[in-house]
Length: 287
Image 1 (cartoon, rainbow, N blue to C red):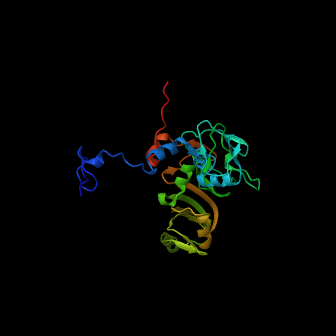
Image 2: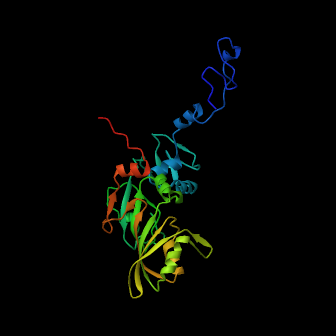
Image 3: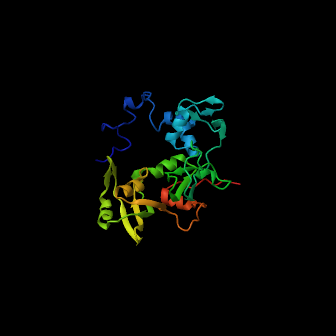
């Protein structure tokens, strides 16, 4: 059905100068999204949990946990609600340390060596990825994780909201691994992984598994999966009676490890971010 023309009411009656109700002032309407209420809301600033995520402190979900733990202050006052708003001139601190204003979104590829954990602080005192990064980088958080003994491609970003977005299963992005295993390999069992598998009540989605090479009881496999659940590759291999001696991630969605040397970090070109993720180009500063 065609929408009514501009000179008709929604009930079909024509509105003209003779219509008494056309001269009546419109009754005051309740606040609605996109109206004056939304405009007033935007003037209040940005919710602090989102602000902290964009500043690279943590994902928005983890930022809310940090707030609940009483670790965040806004202009010297303790923040207790993630719905607190931050104004441009406000000072935000976490654990007593000031947090800089969020910068433009940046993404980095890092070739993680084995022996590093991907958390900022490790209760066991093990070395972290962030301790090994070169100086001059913004505060970064990891996109997903690689466990202590795993290596290969780890994405790092200064935007917690982007990190969360890249981790969502709905992206259906393929994570690709090369895995060295020890044990007897049944090609038919490997092929069957594409249908998914349930291990101790946990359902894992389809995995594309291929045998690259074999020497005695040692073999290299290539695995491609989309979910990336905690320790998924190791648990699936163990279920098949295979011992993982090396696990290397070589791709995360469209981002590849390529020839990046172990321990090296490389920033993803902003143009690639715009093309792959639809991010807006940063505003240019006028001289």
